[in-house]
Amino acid sequence: MSARERELRGSTAVVGVAESMLGEVGPGISSLDLIGQATVAALDDAGLKKSDIDGLFTHSAFFNLPTVTTAEYLGIRPRYTDSTAIGGSSFVADLRHATAAINAGMCDVALITYGSTQRSSSGGLMTSGQVLTKSYESPFKPINPGSGYALAAARHMHEFGTTREQLAEVAVAARKWAQLNPVAFMHDDLTIDDVLNSRMVSTPLTVRDCCLVTDGGGAVIVTSAERAKSLKKAPTYILGAGEAHWNMHISQMPDLTETCATESSKNAYEVSGMKPSDIDVVEVYDAFTINTLLFLEDLGFVKKGESGAFVEGGRIAPGGELAVNTNGGGLSYCHPGMYGIFTIIEAVRQIRGEAGARQVDDVHVGMAHGNGGSLSTQCTAIFGDESTL
Image (cartoon, rainbow, N blue to C red):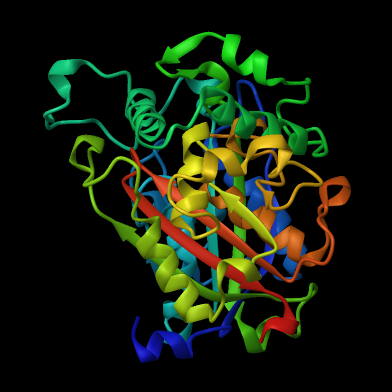
């Protein structure tokens, strides 16, 4: 962390957040339509006009030149554009990039947005581009991304004694949060036995250990702290952020039980001046149940190897010790290919006190954490309200 980056603490704020239609939107609705829906709603949330947007940040697996295509669709001409492509963590990284651009005078109002019709278009997983180079993993014919995450789960179980039941606790907790969220995709009751007895995808992970396949879009609007004070909603300040990537293929991870979230969160904590015990709500990218366990450790909430025992007994469920994935997460709320933007939206809503039945008491500091690839890229952002400045 540089001294200059430390000076950026609280210099920008999220002033608008919104989702589009979620779940299964059906034929006739495109990923750009979902971006449009979310953008209009986020502008209204912020009390801004489309003409105020002069910075655009997006990434897509559905169309080429993502910012160019999105700008044309929205009818805007940004003077700063960023289409960083590091998978599902891209949008959390965009918070840091937008803060840098705003402070450099390259834009004043940044739109971070994403839309996907993954479920309606294909019913399966979308990738961010055709794989033209073979990896050392290819001869083994993995069912990716599931097989990669299953490998990490199996190693965590072997090394630390983590159990299938403990992994299932993550899915059950997510479902309980989703039952408090009216727009979540899944509301049915879910038990540990249901998770264990569901269809096997890649040992040891069953289908209920894996994220949803849904449609959906989101938008986040960022501006300077000074401008934010005059807008519609109380600012949610970006206190610090960090990003890291150590590997593309999971076979190249130095240690299958440790992700570079250790590095991204270190920067976020140092810039923000916060520590894990200061965080009131934790929104992580739970593409698989093992993700939540790994990130609770690598983000510093529990020691390495202790996350399995930590989540037992509903400790991360509603009413538990630590509020994790309060919207239901990618496991039960939505997961339209890349989920990172929704961690931001939920963290902001919790800090604002706008989360309805799932609202956690006395929230002042929230974390959004994004993941991309096969535990390849990690980005961490920490937000706070006025009291944290």
